[in-house]
Every structure is written in structure tokens, then in C-alpha cells.
Image 1 (tube, one colour):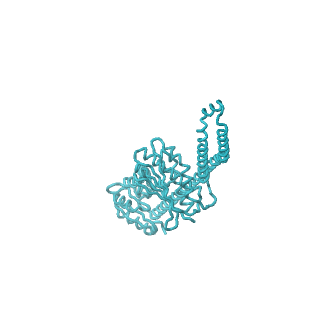
Image 2 (cartoon, rainbow, N blue to C red):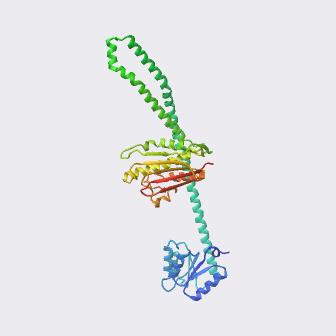
Image 3 (cartoon, one colour):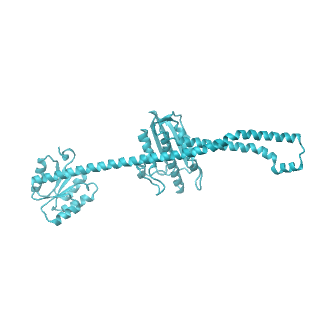
Length: 421
């Protein structure tokens, strides 16, 4: 069965009844489907409505010539890829060269030889089929290469980021452990020294002039009162650094080899801790308010390190969007906010929504957000891989869904849905 029988037809364009009869008979005898046009204008209109597999085009016709018809067909994106074979009695080199220059693929001379018409038609239909097949293979290979590139970049970024953060957490942990472990005995020693000084004051109420001068210079009573406060401040500071170290270690977990049960709320909170410096007020921008609306979630089987990377990309983009909105005076509701909500839906999937009240995303950009290497940021400010990697992690690694809802001036909301299996 021929290709035209299954999926298309050949368009014959000729004003001569005898030529039409010969061509129609030749194609019909071999089972080819075909349609007829008697001038260039109607041929262009037919080809635009329903693209043929091949066009047999007469050069000399009333109205626009075959050359002009060919030029218009090749200038139209709808018809530019249709192979055109000229049918003509013009055998001079100049005419043939002009036809090839305009985009024709071949010539069939008049008068027609049945076998030659069929042979040339078959060859060019096969060439078209091979070309389309090759283009499809190239597209598939390009997509596969892009996916492989994204995956390699993702793994490299995750590995590098994890090692960096784990290293920082480890380096923080040793001195902070040393400081925090020494605060309790220091409090005990200072309490003992304070008690002894108070006993001296009670038993020797009249110290020497030199001691009185030293007490007054130091303001001993104030120092004894302030020392416990200083120690409490040190204790509070070390606890905060220990909490940061714990958050960094939690964020840096890779878990690449297997899914493990994980607390996604802890992952979100540790990511926010890593981004804390960007959430604070800076220059002309007020601090970003983070609103958490967490429902009770079970431990979720996932690659927690990769999930944290998704949270990082989405939250960092939200911060960037609000920075840009404030810079352009387009902040929705004035106060920058990020709202994070979690729930279990009716299908028992875990749902995480991360929304900002920035300037939103234009419709022309929204459908390309998850394409590899696509970015709206200036050169040097973004690779265009963050959301692409996030999409790959959610959709391919967790069999989930990542979608975005946004309107210009109304902010943006990313929704992550993953099955807990």
C-alpha cells in the first residue's frame, strides 16, 4: 500500500485536459490518491487547506505561472516542506535552474512517459518519508540529549551543593559543640566565684582603699548582675547555630540510591533556613513574610535531597520575582509574602503549594517555564535549568505533578503533587 493511500494525496496542477488525463491515469493505475487544480491560485488555496504529500506543478499556466506558484508555496510555513516536481516542455538549462532555485525537487518533461512519472513520484515520496523519519529521529535524539544534560547538571548541582552544605555544617558543628558544652560548667564556675565574692563582702565589709578603687573601676555589682545575662545570650546563640547546622545537614541529604521516609515539613523549613539571608530586609526591600499553613502529613517516601532542591528552586524564584516586582513598583498588596500550604488530597496524594504575591508570569512565558535552558533572567543571572530540573525530579523521579498558576499582577503559585508510595 502506498503512503498516499494511507495518509495523503498528490496534487496535480495543470490547465491542459490532455496532460491532466495522462497524469491522472498514470497515478490511478498505481493506486495513488490525487486531487486536481487547474491554476496556481486554486492550487495554493488547496495546499493551504489540506497539505498534499507531493505536488506535480505545470510551469506554463494562465494567471500566475508555475514558478510564481512555487515561490508562494515555499514562502508559506504551511506549505514550504511539500516537495514540488515541475511538469514542463521547457527543457532549457535556464528554466530548470530557475525551478531548482525556487525550491523544486525535480522535473518531469513533456510529453509524459508513464514509467518515468511513476518512478519519479515514488522516489520523491520515499525521500520525503525518509526525511520526515530522520527529522523525527533528530528531534527524539535532541530531546534525549537535553534530558541527559539536565539530569547530569542536576546530579552535579545536587552533589556539589550537598557536599558544600554538609561540609559547612560539619565545620560549624565542631566549634559550636565545643562552645555549647563549655557554657554549663562556665555558668557553674561564675556562680561559685560570685558566691565567694559575696561572702568576702559580708565577712570583710571594710576592704582596703586599693580594693575599693578596683571595685569602683570595674563596677563589680553591675558585672556580677550582667555575667549571667551574657552567658544566657551565648547559650541562645549557640542553640540557634546548632539549629542552623541541623537544618543544613537535613537540606544536604542526597538519598540518591533509594527513597526513604521523610518529613517534608522539615525539608521545607530547612530550605527556608538556608534562604534566611535572602528573606531578611535589604536596601529598599522589606523583609519577606513567610506564612506556613501546614496540615499533618505522614512521612513521605521520596528522595529528600532532591525534594529539597525543588523547594530551593521554587522559593528562590519566588524571592527573585518579588525583588523584581518591588524594583519595578509592581508588588501586589505591598508587603512581600510567601505562603506555603500542605495537605493530603482526596486521592491521598501529598500536595504542597508555594505561592508569592509578586508580579506574576506572562502567558507567553508560562508554558515554557519547564523547558531546559529557558530563562527570562539576564545573562549571567540564571541558567534556565532550575525549574526544568525541578519538573524532572517531581514528574520522572517521583511520578508526580508540578504545575504553575499565575496571572500578571496577581502573583504565582506552584503546586507539587506526589503519591506517597
